[in-house]
Image 1 (spheres, rainbow over the protein chains, first blue to last red):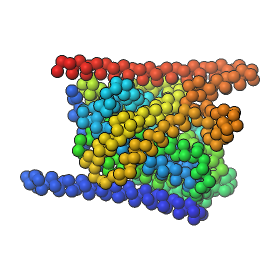
Image 2: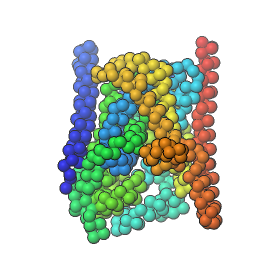
Image 3: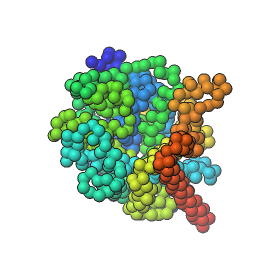
Image 4: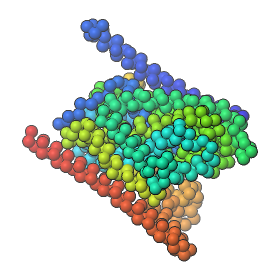
Length: 47
Length: 558
């Protein structure tokens, strides 16, 4: 079986890296969306 | 001046291309082996410390340098560095940022071509029914150009040429081609990686056999993740962690600067660089640790893994282990494993082509397609000796001088330039332009003091690596007045050709005449490889000199 100490270490490190990666990508995508929205509102012809 | 009109099609495309540049074969093959050899779960502590203090700052430094140079229409390191300080020497230090890529691509494309060949052989069932020794022997025969495994003469040469053509064709499509390859490659790599990771996590003790009764996949996971905190006091572990961070992020090559030079002046680089860096870490820490070691431990036991863990496992062992999953599933797993390595490889080798192309476009107004094909030709000329004389150690020489020495040297020098000459304050302000994430101010001081010092230490570590990489024993020897025992892998000993000279001396003393002539022949090829690399460096330096003169003349006539 997987030892408890190994499992804890693995879950903490892999969990933290996964969460940070997802957070950063979410931030990138949200910012992209906001930019698109602002471009649309600035240029109503494209709507 | 510049005729470069290329630009990134989308922000996600840029991040995936940067992540693809960093994600390479080392994520799946180097990281787990380093972790096993350096304290298992405890290795992750120095590894993460180095990522925070050296990895992230280096990413920021290179992204900032690239965007800064791009503002002046420079897309390769010689003239990017030139814009940062007017001392002409920096241009020639920037040559490393083109040379490293061409020289690494020369042998990296060869490894990449192995993955294509192994995908093909997995699908057609070449490994069906082969013993462990036969699978390992297949690799030896494959890299020996005089043998044929599929009835096609010079099989490895054809796969190499195909791989190089594919790379060159994608590069000739410009940044959009690179972006498309990354948008296809990275998701597929993740998909294949998840599949193999799930398989390894559910393997348990089901792979134990009469030959390996103690085989257990969980032993592999335990060994990788159980912290052995006493190893933290060993400098070797810290050097290994710093080295891994360095290689995994593909810093010190000039590719990040080149990619970033196509980012517009006020577009974000702070968040983008973090997203790309963490994607690489995700692939390395989450997927890289869950494939090779647990699967090998699951069938061969941890004792075997500890004795044999290394780069060769990917080609010499994995196909044999997949055979245990039945003919259909083994073909699928083999295709996925080598496909994963192929996508990891091609997204990196494409990045290696862009600095040369950018340089020719900027300085000599060469068309993108012509520049891409000239890259292919340059790589072919440099790479063929690694294919034909692989068994003579030419490949290893390229790997050492281009893939290790040049990288460490260039990263150290560019960091000194950025932090101490260009100025960390100015650099920090440059990085913050358009930033879409709040950067902690203390990082300015890390950029100014910690990162350059860490890199200088890494450089010194590579220069005088102690015997057996045992730093404690070396310091003990120094204290006792016995001097510093240097390893043959240190830069100083490598320059002296110490390893092969020692072997020749031993063979002469043992009167093994055949071995002596074999070793002398090998030494000749090693020297030849060094001369070829030096000539390539000098050729690029000469082109930079010509480009600088042309610029000077153009400025005078204006």
